[in-house]
Length: 155
Length: 162
Image 1 (spheres, each protein chain N blue to C red):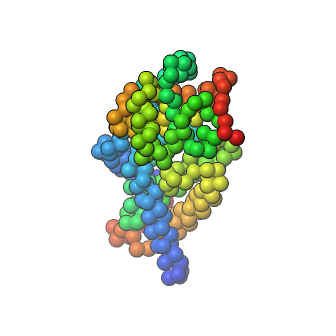
Image 2: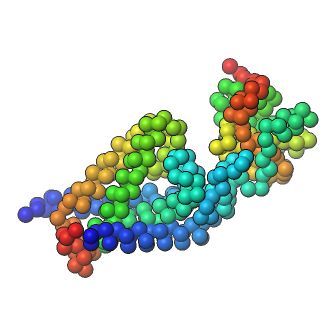
Image 3: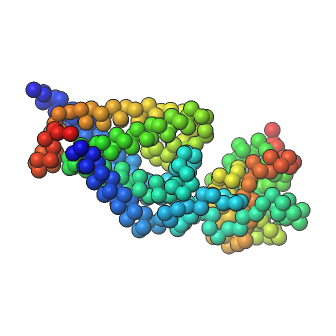
């Protein structure tokens, strides 16, 4: 039997993580030019895929975040968010490790510099832990999924 | 399995949302960018691309135009400028090209040719400066695409305030 505090905690996590992804997507959606330049700066994707990633990724962040807030397809949205975070963590760690000077462009275009990249790496790992907690929870309370019978705790 | 199916739906909806929002953005980009050029500043292409509308030139052309009395403008930060710049270059850092002072516009308008440059092939400040000058009525500003990095790599003389 889960406690009321545990359910409240999971709901807070869900709203926070969803809100974070919606927030982080907005400035990227507003300026595809600048976001494409940031992805290019990571020097990971082949040149042909840079623009496609800059177009699609912010949309996926926005939709996953919004669905998680609404609690609709919340397990799928959490899975997508976890996958995004895993990709961000790998990309950040790879570039920090090889000593590349780059603009991580994670939450805003303003923050750059090397120390900032390490801070963001730590933050992303924390966010990934939150997503993992949401995936591990047997049931997510107060969601549209519950109302519609979409989340019966089955994987 | 159920969760993976849901995730696929989320990704498909997200990709659709991304493509829709990009297509109506004033700063929209094409599906494939101009990141691989034989010579020049790589860019995403599309609407509002700062590299559009400016002529990029190489080191040889830059040196030749300098010999003919071209005005050269350094679009990098004041610090970078002080550390070392192309001899004779005027510092026009971001704070100034965002709000061009009349003396710069005047000098540019009276020069036979104007060249802007920044740190390397990867920066777009020189293009932003050239665009700002065009909006201020000074067209035809050339951008030395290789910038300070190419200038140094070729062993050209560097002037420094330190």
